[in-house]
Length: 533
Image (cartoon, rainbow, N blue to C red):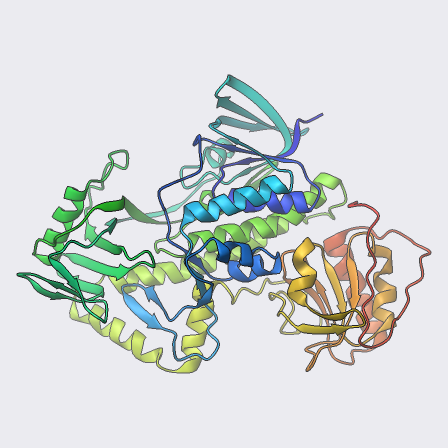
C-alpha cells in the first residue's frame, strides 16, 4: 500500500501543472519542494508558445491574464540567436506571449493545484529516490526531520541538477557553452534619457540603441519591461566558467558592460540580478521504470523563452497517461509513449535553440553574412510562419499510426467553433475537464456506435462547424488528435480505424447495453462516465 499515487519532485511551473492535471484525472499527487516558500525573484518575466493554447483549453488563461500586466497577444517579434525575428508581418502569428513574471505564474498554478486537492509541501528537500516492482520511494527532509514517502510513481520536475534523474541513473548528455550571461532588471537613473523608440541617451556617452549590440568582446542587450524597469543582459565567453553559488552583484554587471561596450553605463537600483550559462542537454530517456522526468530535469536549451513552454507541455502530455497507469486501465505501452512523444518534441526544441547558438556565437564576416541571409529569408511569409511555429512548439505533430495519412492526425486540435442544440461552444470549451473527446462533426451514427463501448472513458459530442476539416476527431486529453475520419470516409474503414485508436489510447472496451442516440445534425450528445476507470 503506497502513501500517495504520484510524488512530484519540484514545485516550479512544470511540477505544479502536473499536479493540477493529475487531480483532474482523479489521481492523488504530493509535491515536494525544497524552497520553503513561493519564489519572489523573477526567473522569467513571461512565457510564450503552445502552452498558452493548452492553458486556454483548460480555462486557465483568463486567470493568468488577470494576474499579468497585460493580456496574451501575438508576439511582434522574438529574439533568435542574437537577431530579432519580426513577426508583425503575419496576420495571425503562431507565437503568442504573456507578460507574467514567473513568481505570479507559480502562485496561480499553486492556487489551482490546491483548489483541485493537490498536496504541496514546501521546505521538503528530496535526498534520495528509489524504486522496485511494487512502487517508488522518496527519502525527504522536512521541517520535522527526515521521513520516507511511497507512491506508485515519482516524477522529477527538479531542474537541471535533478536528483530524481541522477537516482534513476539516466544519462544527461550534452554541452555547456562558454558563454556567461548576466542579467539585470534595474531602474533608470536621472543621467539616462529614454528616447521614444526605446533607445538610451546617456550623458557623456551618447545613444545606446535598444536590442542587441554586438562587439568583438561579446553582446550587450537592453529592452523595457511592462513595469517600466530596464532589462539589461551581457554575454561574454568565459571558458573557465563561473561559480554559480556566488550571488551576482551590481558591480559585476557594471564590469561586464564595461568589458563588452567599452563604456561605463549608469545603472539604478536592481530588482533582479542573475547569471547563467547556456546548456544544450537532453535526457537519454524520460522514463526509467517508475521514475519519470519532465521540464528542465529532462532537457536544457541554450536559449531563453523555451523552457516553461516545453516543460509545462511535458506535464500535460504525461498526466493523463500516468493517471491511466495508476487507475489500472492503461493499454500496453501507453506510458512509454510519453518518452516517445516528448523526447521528439524536446529534440525539436533543442534543434532550434542550437541553431540559435550557431547564429549568435560567430563574430567574423562569415557569421555576419549568415545572420543577414537568415533575416532576409524571413521577409517571406512561409519561412517566417514556419519559424514562428517552430519557436512556439506549435508545429509538433506526433508520429502516430495514421492509416489515412490525414494532416490532422497527431497535431494539436484546432479550436473549432461548434453549434449544438444547447447553443454555441468550441473545442476549447469541451477540453476544460481534461477528458478525451470523440467529436462527431457529420452526424455519423456509425462513429458513435463504434465508440460506445468506451463511453466510460471518453466524452462523445455531436456538433456542426463551418468548413469542417473532417467527419470526426478523437482528441486526447492533451489536445492532440489520435484519429481522424476524413470527410465521407466509408463506414467500415472509419469503424476499424477508430476501434484501433480507441484500444491503443484508452484500453479495453467495456460492453454496454446503453443505446447510442443520434440527436441529428447540430446537436450535442455526451455520455458521461460512471467512474474514471
